[in-house]
Length: 105
Image 1: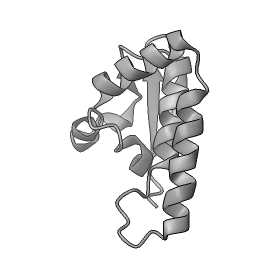
Image 2: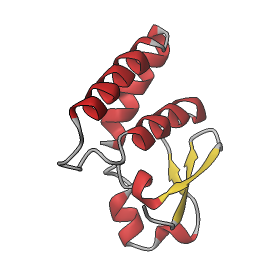
Image 3: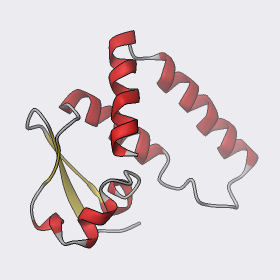
Image 4: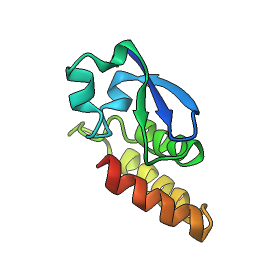
């Protein structure tokens, strides 16, 4: 895993320091990293701190999705985690999470 840290800042000013590999799960962030924006925080205007925290949690869990050799047990655990993750938010949070996922790609 990459040791480079990226700071993602929400629209309400909440900052989260994450591994670059996690930040790159957000397709909107990749070009910003390529253009040397990580010297300072990457501001995500359309995402609140609460929602950004949920998005980061999801990305951390899915950082190894590209591994072809994941065991069936690991795949099932991830699927179960995804189901629980999507059940947990209230309707308003769920809608905001879907909007953020669309914005962040």
